[in-house]
Length: 277
Image 1: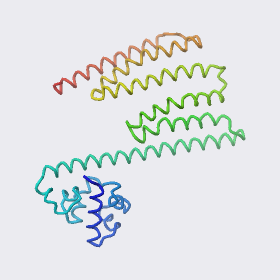
Image 2: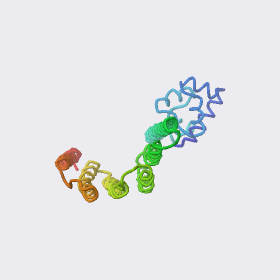
Image 3: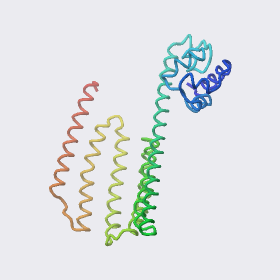
Image 4: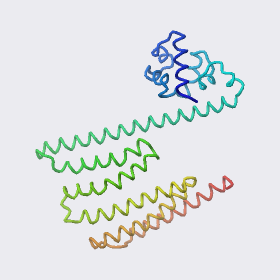
């Protein structure tokens, strides 16, 4: 299926019927901007609009999907018509997901900007300068670089988010260290904990990539890996601030994680058995 060919066909048939883009949009209860995007091949009509659109233009749905009128190949090959319809539904679904991701990323960005502006105004009004507001402002900027790629691009954006975390975590800690009186503890703790946490997140991502066909097992292995990571963080804290290396809460957490791991392995076994693999 070719969006540009479909768009050209829609444009030609619309003009043959002496309709403007607005006229066609009104009949389909959509905006004229949507029609313009269809005709330029930038997007495609929703699957629910195929039938009324083809009726208005005086063609079949198969011809609309093919982008050609009176195509003998479409008429004589119903299997290809079905294939085009399925491909179109998949393309339309992906387009809708991308639109939703774009909206969410825009909303997320606007919320962060509003948070930055609010903190800056309050700080200036109270202290007459930028003081405490620099902490939430730097956190908002860090969060934007960290989460926007994943929100905007989904799974493909996770790599960018992880890369942003790996690169920006040290500058972020340095900014916080310059703004917070941490008695010299922020950097020693922050650097070590961030290295362990970042390594864990990269490992979990790689595990899911390797076991992408068995997500339950990937989740179980990732949870299993979280146990030594948490113990390593405890070890770091015990060395720097003399905290307990292992307490009752750690024992409870490990017990809960172990239970979840067992449950996930059982679920994976049941799913594979049901599929006969």
